[in-house]
Image (tube, rainbow, N blue to C red):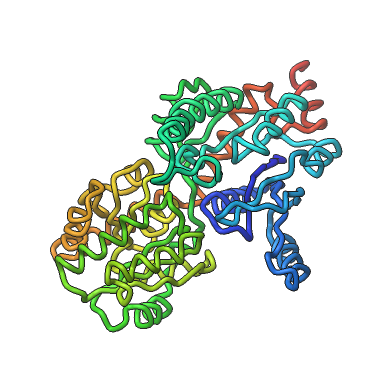
Length: 431
């Protein structure tokens, strides 16, 4: 099968969507499919490093099992480093003119999204869309839609209208023009249905490759020794340092935990983003600057060792569709304490492989204390490992292959069908 995947962001950008696209593409290649990922170009912010930066991207693309075709993006970037794709993706259009694909899998409803629909109609191909992102939670990346204490009531009402009316209406329109929608979790499936989407929706979470299930005990111990700072417990969290990840609550929760249980713990925050400086100031204001380490970005293939090194994975984001890092924590055998939200509610079984709480700092802190109790911890750790097994990429890829086929059948048995196959099937029909 020849699969075209269209995305607005990909490596070297660090985020959940690029990770998901890369894992899906590479697992499908292992099954014998040809996967082409159409991804935007990236430029270094440092002109002196521009050439070497591009070389590194091209080298990484060349080493990968999936084929990557880069299309032009605009020079302007979002605050979080995400690029704006170009208005007309000539590289995508021209590739489709030269080559035949069996299906299109698009990962964003804007920019490349409408182009995917257009290509699907033009070439009679099924279009599958993965609903990765709750866009109503990301409006602050658009400068004119940012809300603060100085914003007028009219602006606040306008932004609320966009969140509650415009975005759901657009997502309903886009999804209903696709042949199938992948929802990363059951909670997201329910939310999408609530928008009035009639397209078939399959629950399809982002998976983990087999390396996530192989523990490097020695490396995990080294990390624990380095980052626990001599404290009894090490906690970890992983995500971009952005507003939608709710780090303000997480830091206040850490301060509450210190108040309730003392300071015999250290928190490791993995990730980078536009709020890093602000969050560091926040730790100083709360008096927890010596209890928190901002480690920056860690290569994806090394994150599992940091998760294995920790006693608990702490999470406060309420904007997730799945929360890939939660599945990664489970695969590492690390119980999770998270805030009730879509995504987290689908992975964390309250009281089994972790705890879910309301967005109240004292409640969140109390569940961390409860999770560490001897009578609770070992059982939760074992349950987390079992939960992680549900997210093996190799198993999910087979399911994804089946879903692609279903879309192909609806379009006329297109998938897997070459000219030779078509002739053979016609001959069989005559016989």
